[in-house]
Image (tube, rainbow, N blue to C red; front, side):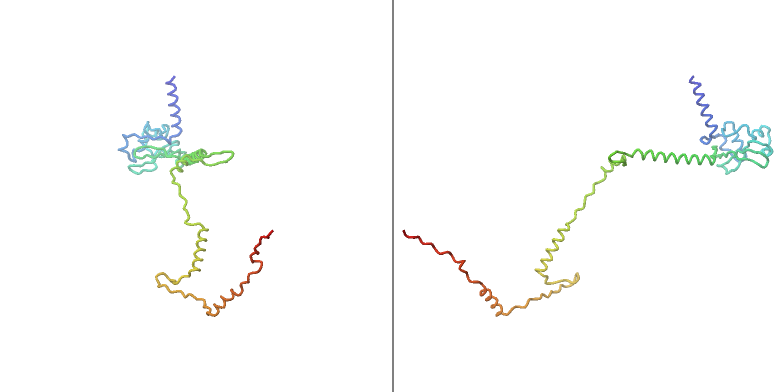
Length: 257
């Protein structure tokens, strides 16, 4: 039972790799030191190579001991050496020949340092790129949705895992205290203006570093002595005499009985 199950798994894997050969590679270390454009097709036609089709025309020519020039006169699948860059790179093409002048490319294989790979076709490249992009976008949406929170009273908001740690590590910025308020500045300016009016400066400096210049203080003209004496007399004459109402009431005398 277990043996049959293992054989079934191997058969499924073999079918998968036979259909899709883009994920595998093949190498025969015995051929690597002697690879050249003359024997690279013989190396590619090894029986252990999964990329080689046994029913191709190359196999027929090989069994009949003919040269590769006879491939142009045959119809069917064949392999040719498309490009060679000794000693590291060889490109082998699999094609379907329909006439001596008409062929249809089927697949390309590149050999790098003796390791054989199948070159992906345009559809496989586009499919792989689109699949990678969709997977990345889907992963981004899934991660974004994991940070989304909802409450009927608050609505939607974002809650990140490291948000609390950032708030703990982040130093709290201290509010800068103003040296004085607007009321204090206006009050001080008013007091300074009042003091300046009462005690005007004796000197002023036009520019920093220059010698102070004395300020001319205008003195009020003094009144003559006679006018001063006359002003002192006028208040004395204008003072009203004490009225009778302001006199003290007469003393009451006791009656004799």
